[in-house]
Image (cartoon, rainbow, N blue to C red; front, side, top):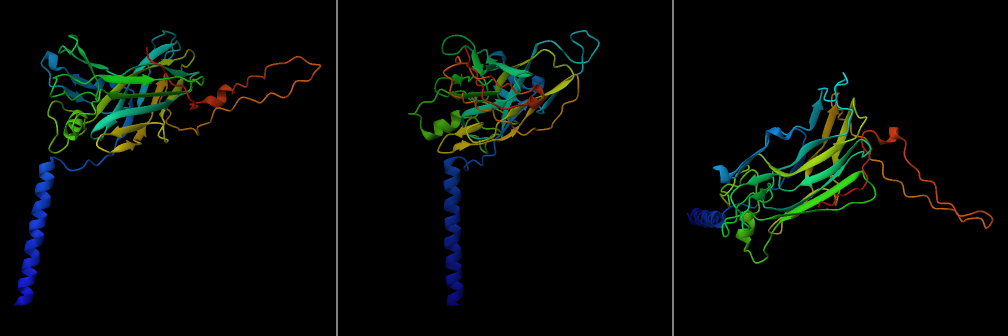
Length: 317
């Protein structure tokens, strides 16, 4: 009898503790995020849309099926052969999925620049025509999709990039205007989630299937007709990453590369990256011979196919 009574008391205490924990979770709004970010190149961005509130839209971002292959089988240069043998540009979207409380991001992309290279990046590829704090339309990406409940505006996106003498690698990063005085709840509300939390910590936006971080313009070089060209996202440490507010730290995302079939089907083979060799060390000059600069060693084109990651980074203007 006493044993049964003790067992009953223990069960009651456990129930009370469980209820207290549940109420604590509900009171905090949401459970802690489970982060599984995926960064992808969408080579066919026509299926990605933004619903402009200034035109009666909902401030929502729709990402369609992410396609990692763009195949051009038309004949735009009218030479009777599929593909374009001229210098031409293509625009692709950088997509992020399955992330919560995004504060900033970084992407590192590698190409064989003798075949395809980076020309420019747009950190705010969409427009909210609602007049912003300066009276003009507001640039929008997934990063600043939430609308600040205090100002009624999107936070500004600050994007940056740089360059290096090696033209085979591009690196860019972006953040939104952050205020260190914001409370934790405000920081989480202004930092976007996709898909939304349950319940959401902000109802000013919607991005159920991912968001567009930026639009990249790539320049295809002349003579690439009949080739499959590759654009690789670098997932190594210090390459591509996302930063999370609230002590979430940096996370290296799962990445998905992009391919452009210029008159042919995309070739999805991934070559082993070949590091850029260091410059040769000149030997001491003989007193009887003039100084000569060391010979420049240029890899044969066959060694560069389809991509040779190096280290170019672009500076936007």
